[in-house]
Length: 186
Image (cartoon, rainbow, N blue to C red; front, side, top):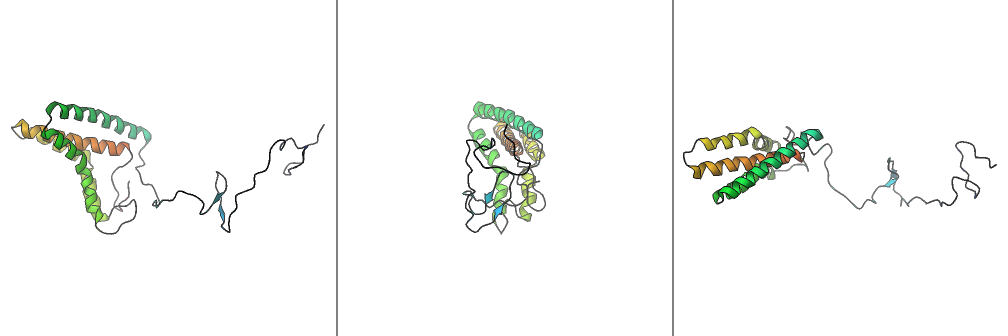
């Protein structure tokens, strides 16, 4: 019978059952850098090939996965409806649908002027961004199709609002919600 070593000590001899057939792998050289502790092993600073300028804190909405899935299902259903409507009417309705998808992100043009941190929108652009990313605004635009007498105006207006709503639902499904007063995603 082979005696096992006392707890806390480690034998490296050939009779040790814990090291039979294995070889010790030396740690990577640190080249004068301190190793950062990690639950995934030793990480040597400066040796990671992937770098990025991520801002501290969350960059996406903290919405629960169930809420994001619900927004995703809504976005998919609205997209199917939008494709059906644009195929049915064609012409200016296609232009209105493309414009409706793009318009909410025009608020980023207001964010281009002036300095700001990565992942953070300038404070003066936040109200405009939040206004264009509210579903109620898109629904009001869709309801605006009830005002004109001509279907040549009403149908593109409805599809513009529908495409806008698709954009908002897709953003929420992907975790991009409204912005806080400091310009970060809330």
